[in-house]
Image (cartoon, rainbow, N blue to C red; front, side, top):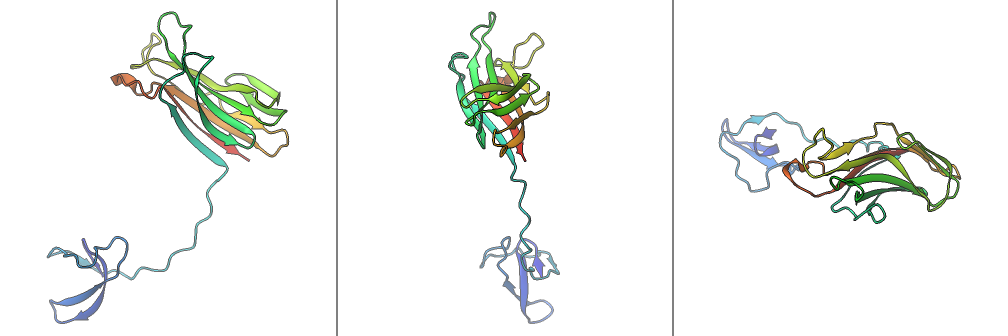
Length: 213
């Protein structure tokens, strides 16, 4: 039977219409042995816990989700702060965050996503940047996804405030030269997201997922 606030019990003995001896079955959500159950707790029928079910099937291991942040931007585009977002086969996806020193009115922060390979003659195609490289060489880094710019504060129509862009131009396709790693990456980034109250950390946020076949 089930006793409210106590859990599941088996009946050991029944003395009379008002007295019964119960045995705590020790289920995970049960009250610990020796606990006092409040007088007047509802008692209702309840069966004994059945055997554990069969293990479920494995989830989709081909999808990699990521969310990474950079607290402080690098000083400029030549020296960005970086974070590794994911590594898939020979491909490495990286987030870069830096201050835009060329801006004349303010100094916004820029967030950009890049991909590189360790295998010569890999291929990358990205709609946002119009990248279409079927001979990407080892160590070469190319930008994918949107460039996101922002400053601390709420978004405004004059171009200041936090920035946030998802994969609105679709995915980035990639394939290794030996054809063993093929997939699509959906990338997004934000700059000073949630900084309407004045918070300046993190400067850059990178998010997305990568699906391989």
